[in-house]
Image (cartoon, rainbow, N blue to C red; front, side):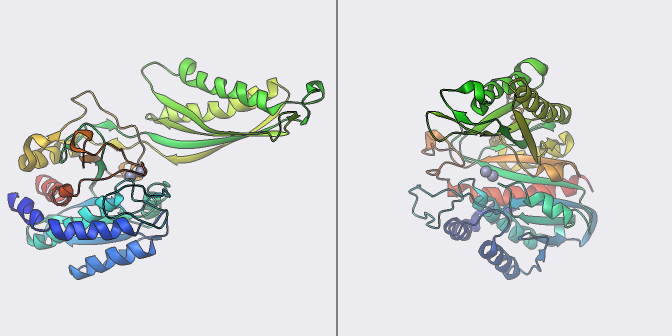
Length: 398
Ligand SMILES: [Zn+2]
Ligand SMILES: [Zn+2]
């Protein structure tokens, strides 16, 4: 498959042009009209007939000339509501930014589409390409699963790449983790605390919701420190506390909102229940009422060890020492969340990372930073890696 790498290199300039178009036209969440029209057009130029799968989702099939299984490769296409401050010559000006590198993922998967089309006769089975919206808002993958992305033909295994920037890996490093939970489940919660407002000099006539919020802020952390085993992990972070207008008025209500990250489904369920119980209990202790709501996000990405091992071997044959297993380096987990987890719940899958710039190389900012810049020279490698992951797995699992 070495010629796939060379063929991808020949596409490098074209991939840069595609990536820059996507980068200066970022769109967010579940409505990506310009992005979808652009991607659809590119796929049609290659001879595909893209299928619409749910709002702003696209899929195409390639292969099927030889018997075999169906392997899915996925890219997300959405950006973030961040005003771009990067100075890399293709800054977006519409108030949104591809700060998470999803423009890279889309470009790389388009490159893979072209490479796979050129090798269609050699594919042992078929490859399904998934272009999804709404990853940042955790709606896209779930919506595409509900609209049948894993059916007709049924998908046997799946893979995805996420770029990594500002991390201590040289450009072109490919991380293929071992089996188990890799990215965390992500859920949110909000609590409205109903007290009784009044004069700041007469607290005896009031129920102070700010006092409750203060106790609750600390009490929620004790779920992590005192109620789950040291071997289990979880994070509760409260990002918003709002209450009050004036220094001498006790407000009526206080509002808190936070995020919960876990790796184990049982720990996840336990923490979600305890956040509700600790909220209502703490409020009752101080004569207030709490109304906690859990907004479920996505589960943890769980990697299939065998799919990961198969693809790691294929990619190592092409890219040598650039392919590493972070689990063996003592980095079995990735701190963020990924809605690809809705795919990993259904079929054996792997989530991989591709470094597109380290601080040493002049890429100091990480994903989601308004000044983040990304190393475009890696685009062709990413396209080749997507195509080879699919072809390699299909050949091995024939
Ligand atoms: Zn992101
Ligand atoms: Zn992302």
